[in-house]
Image 1 (cartoon, rainbow, N blue to C red):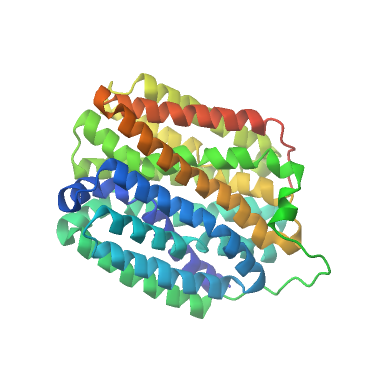
Image 2: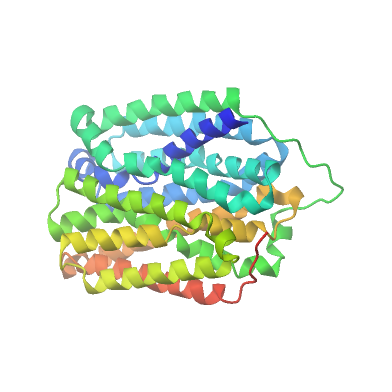
Length: 390
């Protein structure tokens, strides 16, 4: 089981990479195939929405087929195949199709790990283990920053994507040979996602799940690059360095949140406090949009750190999911978390296009303000949730 979890963690490194690397390629893709920021926002949003839509069949597959085959087959076909298609792209539509395929490939990886944690480990350790997997896997977020900028300079973006196709295929084969499926739960109870949606406790958690990860996911995944380039004139290497700082902050936040629910004996207030701070940082970024590049990078890092509540929100929702529906339950929560970023990317692409003629800072002020309002609304709804601690 340990070897299998290590390989799943490597697969999650790839998943984190693929959701964040477009921020580095904006200038190269614009020059080579005419891709605009709106095109890349659409491609990024498509990755997240396809990933989210896959959570329903992935949840069924985890409960019925098991994590080994589900993860290995989808990562091989979607992750490796999508990266290969990206490597030969000649237009923005090819990039979008490639990102959709990669979204399919990455969709089961983290949830396969969470499924194993939920079935093989004590419930009280779920948040810590989930945060550990998320934090270690988020190394992919770092690789998608300055190291990717260097790889693109050395090998070109096509060569970099071809290499990623080979790596994705190798990791998929590793999953097939190392992951062991937990024993199936034998129960007389039947159920589906609809049964989960009938639980009132989840409906005060799901709206925050929808918006909590969206700012850091969307900004690190795309908008940090165009923002720093358009407002402060940073080049590709400098954008890589700035996004490296934000990525490191996201990892640090994930590790920091992991044990807090057990230390403070509450999940609700850990989650609420972190997201309120995230909303405040977004407001400050709006107010100080073009004051100083170092200040903007610091605030982006604060958003990444405080917005890393994903594993604790997942643990909060997991507390209300019956054992025989664990696969469907964790993937439902993930559908909202990842789907929120996808919807946000489509919305922010339109916001950027509508404000692009108002000055270099105007589109990004509008984008950051949109995220601040969304997170604040999610926090208000979340106030009515029932706390849980195992």
